[in-house]
Amino acid sequence: MKKFNTAGPSIAEDHFMIDPLVRIDIEDIESLIADKRYFVLHAPRQTGKTTCLLALMQRLNAQTTYRALYVNIEAAQAARGNVEAGVAAICSAMTNAAKFYLQDAALAQWLYHGDGATAPATDRFASLLAHWSQHDPQQPEQPRPTVLLLDEVDALVGDTLISLLRQIRSGYAQRPSAFPQTIIMCGVRDVRDYRMHTAHHEIITGGSAFNIKAESLRLGSLTPEETQALWLQHTTETGQTFDPAIWPELWADTEGQPWLVNALGYECTWKDRAARDRSTPITMERYKAARERLIYSRTTHLDALSDKLREPRVNRIVADVLASDDRQSQSSQYPSDDQEYVADLGLIATRPQVRIANRIYREVIPRELTWVTQTRITHDQAWYLTPQRKLDMPKLLAAFQQFFREHSDAWIEGFSFKEAGPQMLMQAFLQRIVNGGGRINREYGLGRKRTDLFIEWPIDEAQGYFGPVQRIVLELKLWKKGSLDAVLADGLPQTVDYARQCGADEAHLIVFDRRPDSPWDDRIWQREATEQGWTLGVWGA
Image (cartoon, rainbow, N blue to C red; front, side, top):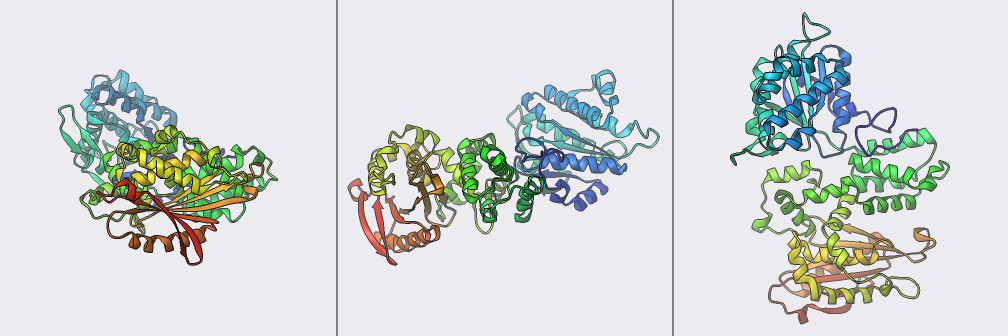
């Protein structure tokens, strides 16, 4: 029985999948190949790049006009800056791929026992490509043009990557008779974003090392229609149904990111053991529970996001988004190339404004960035529960005020995202309390000037979310200048609007006083306010 795929290329016999050649502009790609162009196909990790490349190779080989070969060169990453070892790994990967996909063992014979054995590393890969292009075992008299699909190119670093790009460039003029007609380089980043340091600390960019690139194509996410169609393949296969109310939630959670779409499908239909009985419909509550399990699991895909956040180019942009600010300070003036790079990584969307790419990433990024902080917070959940097992929010927020007063300066200084420090510390505190018992949904983004938190807390443990649920909205605002009355004039209506949108029972506005000379005694306060018929808790920190 087919399943949703969360690891490696998708296989039609084993996995639910959207036709990979539908996801790329196959007509455009075939035109580039016919025009003898070299180009880049890039996309975030685990979006289906390898599946698309393998499907393209199979399509081209079935047409018999070309000899197409897919080669994954990630193994050469281990060579770091060692050109000899790196080129050897690249050449080995190509000869192994030729044996597996084309049943061509002659390429390995030439590399290890022919002229390739004595070729210097700085020319060996170019010589291998030339030999492959001139020798066709099936048509020796008139070799078919070759198409090389190189995957994981941007996994290489330093002199190995420079050597690869320059060897490809060196044979470009000999195509197609003595060099591949087309080379497609595939990775997470566009070639212009390759930043390479030579052994002599020379810095060059991929664009200057590979200035023969004709075009850069980006493999996008699934559309809303494709996202739903993928899940409905499971219904067609098994008869198990999904609540139609899930579809807008699935789109908001993933925005079509292929790994997330598949991972949620796998959680709903397999990791949920009760759902293995295909007569059990997938309800909205089962979907939400699967979403929480996925977020808490800190899987390899989600965990890898935090590694990217350490890069300065990424850090600057994500810091602005996390702060939900519209600052025009010098720190916010990042180059457009940096914004494109972070978008290429799949971390942000840039339309209609710069924001975290999807709702799950919006949940995961603050959790990952505050994970160590969460583990060091000593407050536990039981202390904040009423006898009716509700969250006692006034008690919890009063405790946060004291916690923030004692620890904020030291802990925010330790955050790499200092502008978003107050909001991050609040989320870490809440996550420690709510974790495992309830849900925290987050809304933030560049220019919003606020962070909204929506807490869902099941009152009856036995019934969980199928029983009564306490719903609480918290709105977080920074007060940097002007009067408190102006901050409240903005914040109170926004808090009520968000509470109504979420169907909340209770709402609080937290104002973080970030004025440089404001004493702590003036920052900590609590009051009630009435807005549009709602009674709100208003807290200073």
